[in-house]
Amino acid sequence: MAFETITQAPRPQKIVFGVVILVVLLAGGYFLLLSPKMVEVDGLRQQRAAKETEMLQSRALAASLARFKQEAAALRARLETAKERLPSEKEIPGLYRQVSDLAYQTGMAVSLFQPREPATKEIYQEVPIFVSAEAGYHQLGAFLDRIARFPRIVNLTDMKITGISRPTGTIRADLTLATYVFRPEGAPPPAAPGARPGARPPVPPPPGGRR
Image 1 (tube, rainbow, N blue to C red):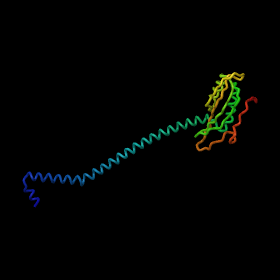
Image 2: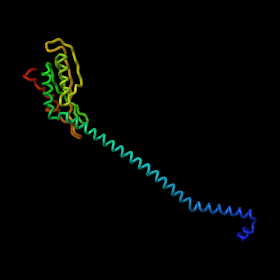
Image 3: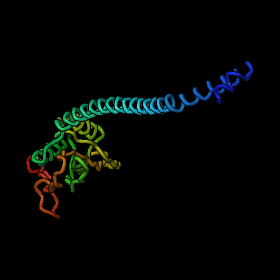
Image 4: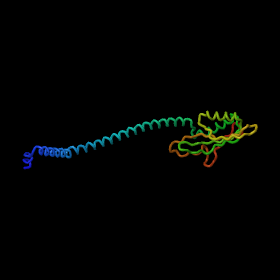
């Protein structure tokens, strides 16, 4: 009956009914067919965006890792170079002797030569040496110049100069020198070379028995 009513209706009403039916069919097709597919497409787009972000992060991490490896290799090379110039623990007593001999060879009248307690750092020990001597500026300059050219690293960390007027020189120089001993990672702090706990390191006598 409804179909006969539509077929017998005037043309304008037929057009309206046709449009309504077309809209219903399109709406039904959209909700039944297209809408789920569009949701699926949106989900795939989100997954693609997440994968692209993950890929960019992985590339940035790989670049950072490569740069870190290069920096670590450069630091290892610098450390190995520095280790070649650092004395070993066994070489410290001989280094004391070299510094003491050098002071006398440059004409300095040494009144006190005192190795002091090492200071333990993270990867090395700083080994201070206190020297008090009377000399002229030329002798002091020659001593410091030759110390700077030592094959092993010996740095001047503190210096105090006082003017005097004596046969031994025109100045008294109180110097604090320091050398360094490399400590392998995880190694316990070594004791002062050749010293008992709480005892001062031995002071090497001057050449020829001079004091």
